[in-house]
Image (cartoon, rainbow, N blue to C red; front, side, top):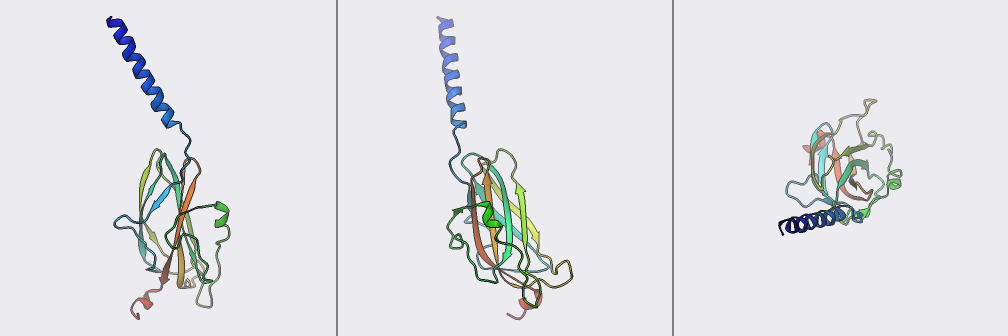
Length: 182
């Protein structure tokens, strides 16, 4: 009787373990989420940043199974273009869209600032808080000032299954001397 009891317990445990393993192997069909609502999220839509200063980037990323990587992009909006997520909606990101956002020269005031950086998220994470500092350089490599004005700040996240989401919003980047005149 004792042997029968041990066999039943062992079979039950193996069945439970097999079911748990099947859950882990379910295909990922959900795209990751960029959460800009947590306390301390920065920058936000309409934030004014300054060349020559550092600013903090802080927001939360989540996925139903496992996050993969994220990227940050700052590009000019001198032509007034928009992205579908500027009103706070989230949309699937297609990598070939990024190819259309490249460096545009500004007017005689200088060149447009451009930044695009990719970051890996540690393996196994379903939630990740991005909290990093970025320096906005004061001048271009040739010594000219960057053109101030309206820029887009874009966040893109990709999970381990390859699904992506992105959010974009407006920021303004100015030079220091304009900070005191407004």
